[in-house]
Each structure stands twice: as structure tokens, then as C-alpha cells.
Image (cartoon, one colour):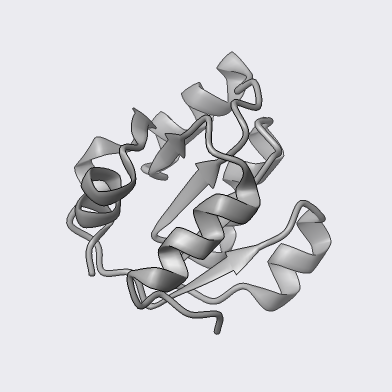
Length: 113
């Protein structure tokens, strides 16, 4: 499944990184603790978090994640959007709670890694 497909299926808003929408998603990860995401998430995964600051983008770029979904209508800092644009990280938002987003991803066949 590609990032574009989850954007369409979950009604996600694209905030940055639209050039990466054709990436394949290899799994999912959910957490707000950056050090945990850095150590546990895998390249190609989609990360669901409530954090909207630029350090999230740095971790996603370092790990090589396919996309980040900022859930729960959490605010996204302008610096995070700019950093995502610079680093080519797909940054998505949704008003859905994180639990709901993860459940829907699982329903689409995206499992934890």
C-alpha cells in the first residue's frame, strides 16, 4: 500500500512532502516518545503521533519513514512543515484520534513491525 492510498482511504490532509506519496508503506508505528520511535520504528513505516514539532520530522528522516501522521488535530509548528519540505518527509494530519487512525491502518492491512 502506498502513502497516497492511505491519504485517500483515511481522508488525511497533506501538509508537506507530496513528492513522496508513491512510497510503499512496509508497516506502522505509534508513539509520542521520540527516542522510542528512533529505536523501534523501521524504514518504510508510517508513524502515528500527536507531536507536531520539527524533531518529529528529524526522527522520521533519520529512520527513513514513509510518512508521519499527526493525529487528534494536534497543532503542527511551521518549523516542522518547513523542515519536512526541506527533507522530503511526508507530513500528514487528521482530526481523528491516534487510536482511531492506528485501528484504521490495521484494518487496511498495515501492521506493526
